[in-house]
Image 1 (cartoon, rainbow, N blue to C red):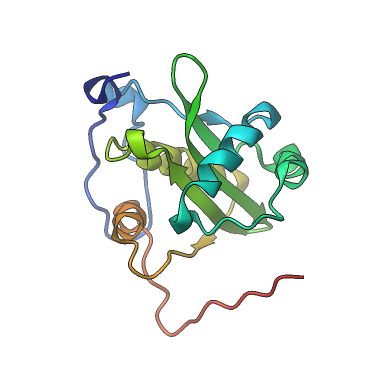
Image 2: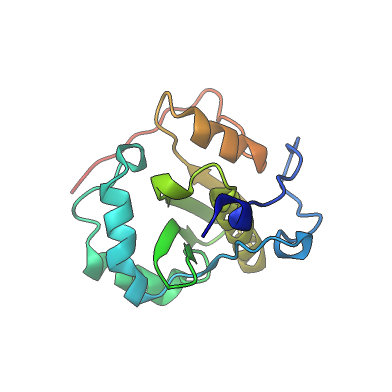
Length: 168
């Protein structure tokens, strides 16, 4: 599929909380995200493994991610080519009124087409339908493309906070 066929209109950079003014699909974009299915997980893992900026951990295996979809398939999104190949994926989850986005990845041959933005907008809408009030995510230092994406859909750095993690 050509870049022209996948190109989407970029929404304006937002100041403050994200409020969709129109859906990307309504703007005539052929790029449509869909809820992730268990059958997509092997392709999603391939994308994550190939993208160092995704900070993929090997324990995020097919069993774990497929199980996660049982309660978060509306939050986890993919974009497929017409032949069904997954070229972009976003993994997210929620607990009560808090949500988190753990990974967003786009195949290198399909970057700079707005695909991550399409998934982000759809995931934020799903969070809103769930009544989630705040969403957290982490961006690796130096990942300017991710920083531009997330600030472009309403995220701001959490000043005065540090991220901590612990693998068990």
